[in-house]
Length: 99
Image (cartoon, rainbow, N blue to C red; front, side):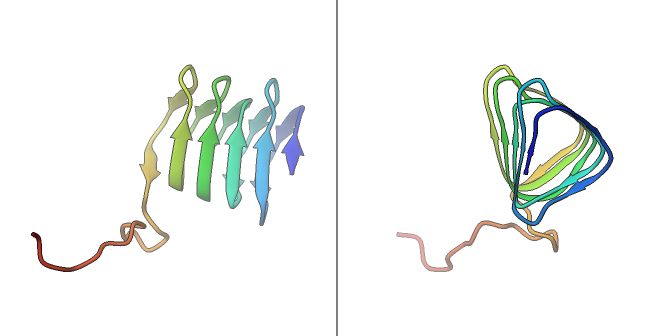
């Protein structure tokens, strides 16, 4: 799903969500992957991957498995990355002896 204008309300997508440069969304977002070049006034509640492009602005909290932030982008809010839904580390660790 691509948003290229102004949208007010929550957005829940089972796939990918792109907020284009110049677009504004006022509401919560939930999607597998969120690519943000525009402005979001709300929280990203659950995403596997969030990509914040140079022109992107998030004014709200973000919770994602991974976050990519370009230079020049802006975030104001609480950020949690690398955690799964149960609050455990999303990265896999191997047990073994150190050399």
